[in-house]
Length: 331
Ligand code: SF4
Ligand code: SF4
Ligand code: SF4
Image (cartoon, rainbow, N blue to C red; front, side, top):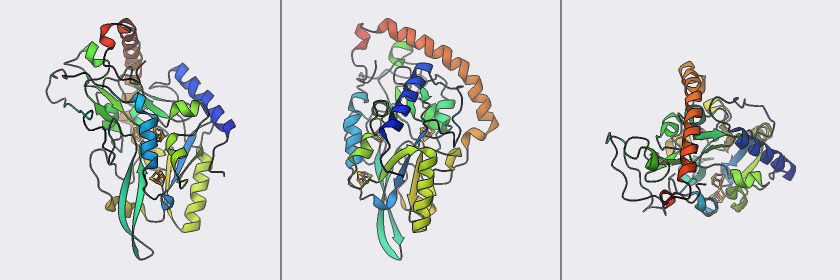
């Protein structure tokens, strides 16, 4: 298929995205099953083509700058003190890992390819899981999934409790302290900021445009389209190069499909791993666990009530002095 998604497809996805927002696609809403097209988007990342230039990283930072946090300082003292401060506001320039100000980074893997030493570079960000535990298990309904498969975190109602990060198989979301509703709600007792991650440029997609990181790439490493087409494309490449696929089955299937000429076990051994630098291991379906499903069902009504209460509170403070210092992306 074409590496460029058609405008018609994007508009269809954009409308679906808008519908998802309007419907408030919160935990408890219908799961988007793998293979259920209906505008469900996925990206293909062909690792062979990436030259590690980081044009995609810069494009992501520029495009999403208005959504980045502007924290109020000094930070409130948290009780219990085990809720750690996470402050990246003085280190916004960091690009070698995920942070609240850097939603995409390039991982490096020194490996052997056809018997020769080589370095492969791998763009890393949210996988946009088909059945995302971050969305299903967020107790406040702040993590949401659109009909087109995009998962995103609503900075208006996120309290920064890190549940999304704790249940994410790749620990993707990153917290910034000193921003968001917790400052007005329970500054010493609840959450500790707002969680941030790639939202697959949902605003651009709603306008019929491709994500900024895809447009900026000089090597056309990424393509985007219906998930079933992206998977077919990945298999065709893998067959041609005798390569390997990651993301088709991980965590029950994701909206990010990698193709590599080197086994992912080898890549996983070669990459540097740390907080903010996710692994490339096989991942079982987190939401297949009956306890998780039960927890999700229990959380859904709480999330709805909490979201409504928080929206009301947000409405009351809008325009007041408390608005000073809020993240520029907040409504
Ligand atoms: S990779 Fe993590 S943050 Fe992204 S959708 Fe999946 S569970 Fe959520
Ligand atoms: S899709 Fe958008 S938000 Fe996500 S990594 Fe690419 S540029 Fe950044
Ligand atoms: S812009 Fe393209 S080639 Fe450059 S690092 Fe990003 S994905 Fe790789």
